[in-house]
Image (tube, rainbow, N blue to C red; front, side, top):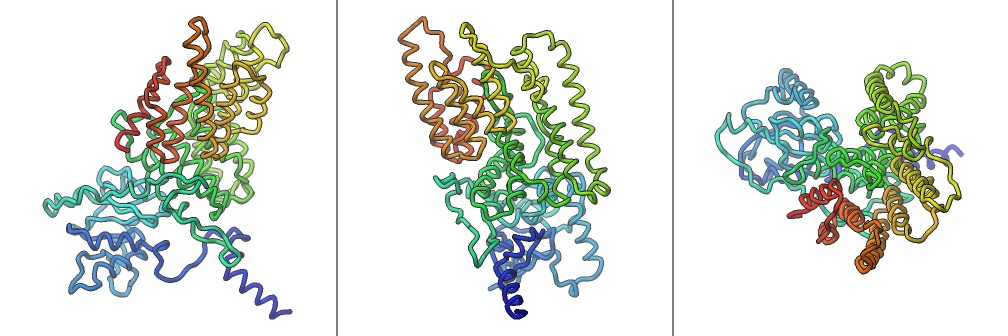
Length: 538
């Protein structure tokens, strides 16, 4: 029996079943693997015709650069500042390396850190979230190459120290990763890695790519670019695509994958924000983000992760003020006892900022109590007020008064508010309780958006296409009847189609959806123009 137990334990460890069941924070691997080490980055730098030496934030990653800079040559084409052979360097070199490594974690420190005069390239590992975000937004450094395991930044001050020697114009290779989603929800050209009985925890290439793109695009800017997609937006877009594919693949830990995917969608919303309104049912990036958060089991999130959620709620748009405050309170209640005593201070700033925003929202809502119930709910859900939860409570009870369309408007608004919060099951129930007829296109559009929020992107794109065809037919009927004052939903449908196709990477379909689309509403017209600008030359 002892021998049998030992054998079963060996099998559990060998197949990584233990890793998955115990939810361990790390595991071990061996060998030279392109999925674990920056081998592709090392080969790219070795073949680069320009000069400049290398420093890696983690000197344990330096061996690949040492090898490929030297193999087959009489002398290395470029030197590495320090690697893992500690016995070959003096103590001061180790201290310098540690100083560089720490400085990479902060934008201000990175801007003034002391690099050896010959060092031009700084290599940051793909899981170094603080360093990737800091270096990507430090004016001193420029992102020049990305792999699934690492990112390479150029010190723009190197030319001042060593003279002109420009890099090739095509060194930044984001286009290599900008591939569309397939019918199975995975990214074209990226091999799926699913768990089997002999390999319980395969390294997901979708997850690796999405994670590094997420940190490279992690910027708080809420001002959409007027010159086309920024580097931040391109990275956030790819992060959302790859991490969504990772959720469908199911190889990475579910709670962590959903958390990062939610952050990627919130980041995309921040970089190209548009507000929900009576004409715009939902900001789909925010709806998808909140839907993912609602699926996370906080009991299986280790102690360091909840702080990331707290930071996301702090960064939530003003339109989600009361929902963010409620979610943050529940998050703190879910903390384990040991975290409540050691980490509570980390939650003070996000909690206080959300509390102040909630007070401002409540002040803006003063005087709304005297409005009719439906108007009061609409006013509270306005992005300038941001009291979505209270808007839901203020909605009037359904009536059977057939002389007005207030029951229809109340149910539609209820569904929209629930969709904006990511509560898709409840939103579907509200929409499906609306009778068909002339409003059926509006209802079908929103049901497609529910699928989008659930992550069924391919299915949602197909349903939006069908709704668009019905809207075209309705628009033709409306043109033949001059006195028909029905609402033309086609521009709104086309915008959602284009936005979804951009997310999925099908830029040709996105441009086709917007072809000839014009909107009478100024805000929707601006959104369509911004989307067209992003799709140019893609």
